[in-house]
Image 1: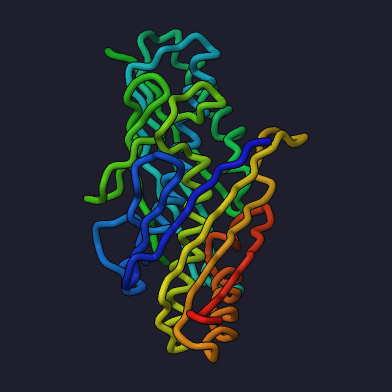
Image 2 (image 1 turned 45 degrees about the vertical axis):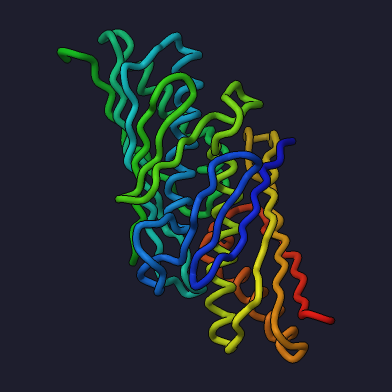
Length: 142
Length: 142
């Protein structure tokens, strides 16, 4: 069992400061569409980023297990929030992963690693909405 | 419908950089217990922080609606991840909120605002595990 602890202290207006041990502080605000300021992280952005980074760290684990050292890994994530009969809720998250590997032989193995990552990522399994993976693996010259 | 978009690019080792528009970059790493470095945010920390900040921004909304300007708002959150029959998953998140208000008359209204916030927070509703709220509202001299 593992515990992940954070503290948030309200600053003023619609802004707070998020801490976790000695990690860099993150300013978190109400989204601009609900009256918060621009250019700071919102709880909704953090949900999008948490799924995306969970898939990344899990992918790195499965890629390493398959003996693959990727050349690059980039992903874009989009979390959709909608009004539902029970109020605002996340209704879907898409994670669009691009991985570059060294050889053509690694391409299929890398696809498999990223798919396994999405399936086993503890966060995508803990959400009531679907997490959709789009993956593209390439190698130089392919 | 709202969309929250983020990008993560892998750096090296078990580290990446998370972006969302022009917001400050967040370095995200595999948790130390799975071989990542210390002192940087992990996807699991971000889940804990996203719930906690979602309850904060929702609380600020309901407090404002009730005409209450809090003196302070602080919360500690703890997200528990465990091995389950289907693999690693979040099994519970506790958010421990402390609010200070100006007058004794505001105490019950503030409790109500924080409870409503936890119920309506789009993120706590989108999780398969329970989100438990512990709230303490006080006023100077109470």
